[in-house]
Length: 264
Image 1 (tube, one colour):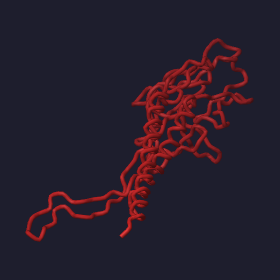
Image 2: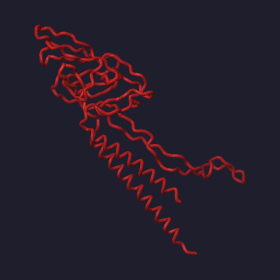
Image 3: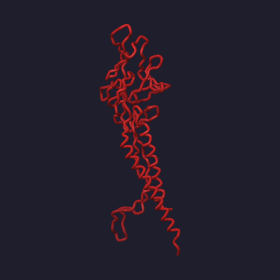
Image 4: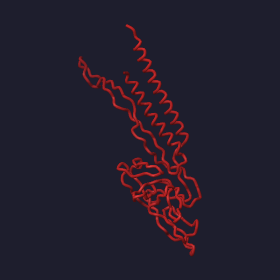
C-alpha cells in the first residue's frame, strides 16, 4: 500500500481540526474576553531509507540520506492572549482589563477560576457576579444603603460607592488581579473561564496598574481578539490544503489502479 494514502489522510485530519479551531474563533468574535486559538502543526515520524553519513562499498560517505515522512499532526492549539478591542458600554458593572492580567472568580467549592470577561451584573443582594452566577474574588457587594448607580471602580481596582445618607464616597474593597508565567497553559473550561494547570504555573496576584498588571476600565468591555479578515484567509488556506491532500489520495489511487491493470 502506498504510504502517500496515509500521509495525505493525516493532512486532511489535521486541516479538519484546523478548520474546527477557526470556526470556533469566528463563532466567538463578539464574546467578551475571548482569546483566539491557533493550531500548531508538527511533522510525524520519518522512515529512514538511506542514512546520511554511511559508507559506500567504495569507502565514500553518503552526504544526504533518504527520509520519508509520514504526514502531519496537530501538536497543540495555543491561546493567543493579545489585547482585545475595548468598547464603551456605559454599564457600571462592566469592567475591562487594559493590559495583562485576569479577574479572579470563585467557583462552587471554593476553587478559583480566571477570566478576561468583565461583563458582570448585580444579583438581588447587590453582589457582583459573572453571567453564570460566580462571584468575583474578593467579593463586591453593595450595601442596601448605596445610592443606585454610585458604584465606582478606579484604574487601580479601588471599589467605592456613595451611601444614601452621605455625600462622601465609601471604600468597599480592592480588586486584585492574577497573572501567569505561561497563560497559554491555562485550561479553558467554558463560560469565559480558565483554570490554572501545572503548565501555566501558579498565579501571581497584584494590584491593577502596578507591577506589570493592566489597568481596569469601568464602563468598558474587552471583546475577543479575533480578526475576521485573518480568520477568513486562514480558512481559505485550510480549505485549499484539505483539497490538495484529497487530490494526493486520488492521485495515489489512480497510480494503484494503473499498477493493478498492468498485464504481463
